[in-house]
Image 1 (cartoon, rainbow, N blue to C red):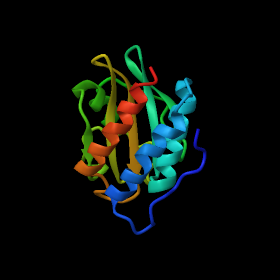
Image 2 (image 1 turned 180 degrees about the horizontal axis):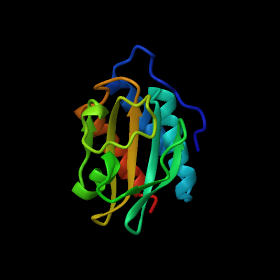
Image 3 (image 1 turned 135 degrees about the vertical axis):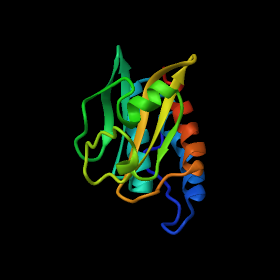
Image 4 (image 1 turned 30 degrees about the horizontal axis):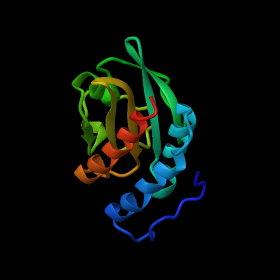
Amino acid sequence: MAETLITADQHASKNEKYTTLLPQLKALTEGETDLIANVSNILAALKEVFGFLWIGVYFVKGNELVLGPFQGPVACTRIGYGKGVCGACWEQKEIIIVPDVDQFPGHIACSSLSRSEIVLPVFVKDEIVMILDIDSEQLSTFDEEDSLHLQQVTSLIASFF
C-alpha cells in the first residue's frame, strides 16, 4: 500500500493532476478490504491534490442520504431523496455539475463558502449505493474533464462493495 502521494507540479493541468493521481488511488487501496478506510483515503488524496473546499460521500440508507467520510467543514448529516444537488443526483441517476450553486433550485447550503459543485452517483449492479459530492469556493470549477476522471474514482469506490 502506498501512503505517500506523488503530486503533479502545482502548475500542472487538471488532466495531468488526475492522470498522476488515479493510479496512486488504486495503489493506495490495493489489498485493503474496508470500505470506509478506502473511501477516506481516496477523499483525502483528492482534497490534497486539488484543494477542494469539501469532498465527501453520502450513503443511500432507506429514503435518505446519510453522511459518510468527508474532508472539509462540517456537513449536512441527512439529505432527502430529490433534495438539493445530492438528492437530485440520486433521483436523476446522473452526474450533476453546478457552476453556481446559488442558481440551483433547492440547493442545500451546508457551507456558505461553497460556490460550485459536482455530484456523482456510485453504482453497484445498477443501483446507487452512494453519492460523491465535491464543493469548491470558486464559481465554475467543475467541467466534463472532472466528470470523466471522477467517474473512474466512483468505479474504484464501487469495486469495494
